[in-house]
Image (cartoon, rainbow, N blue to C red; front, top):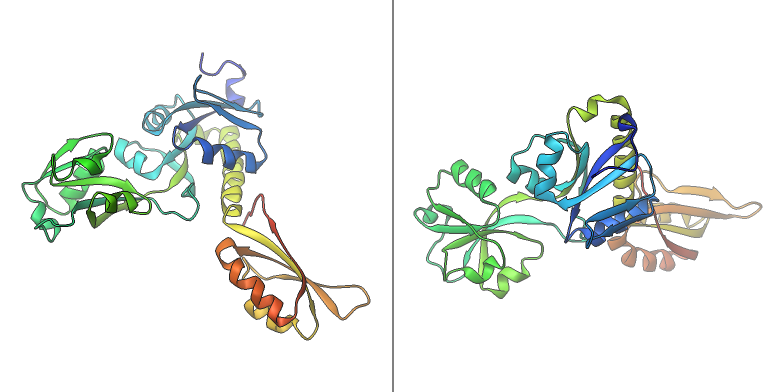
Length: 298
């Protein structure tokens, strides 16, 4: 049985969890939301300390049809996977890339020394890919007649020996460069999304449950990119400090009792903090403390 632990069907959210490359970032994200969460790849089981959520572990391509058919109420999948499977799923929230600091894209690449210069030159050529439906839609949209062959594994190594071009996922583009390939088009930008079955969302309890989960996951995901910052600034410094401090809204400024000094709290992007702290120190701020965040809910 897939979902044996809770027989109250109207009080159970059946949630699809993707593997295998997503295992570590998914575990980290759920733990950051406050759940005790563990994926066991050997038994394809997922443990979560919430009796109202039952998780099913499978590849994202398998999850999309299961959610569409209502076997699962919702799940975490890739935007590209939803497009590739052509499933009609409702997006609850976008979690961005689970790999911090990286943007996942689906690109069309050709050999660096290829005589092809534009998309039109692909006419009559052979393209290999693990995502044929997305590739087909792209070619049709651009009115390009080329053959598409499904191929899994390290497709970068198969061009140009077995094909003229490939359509593939990439984060940094490093693997493509290793095989002397260059990108000539970006088909779509991929991201991880929390989706739901349309019928499940009509159930008030399930809709509220998955919406609450979305708030927690989105907040935890945003917190992975940000840090909290506290510092002390004198009355003479405050105006200058506020000019350099980034914030989701406005920094919180509280006067210290009986003193001409203020306690300043803000939230900043992790990438900005390394430049920000030296600026604050130069202004004259003291007791500067950076700390991690668990959730940032806007």
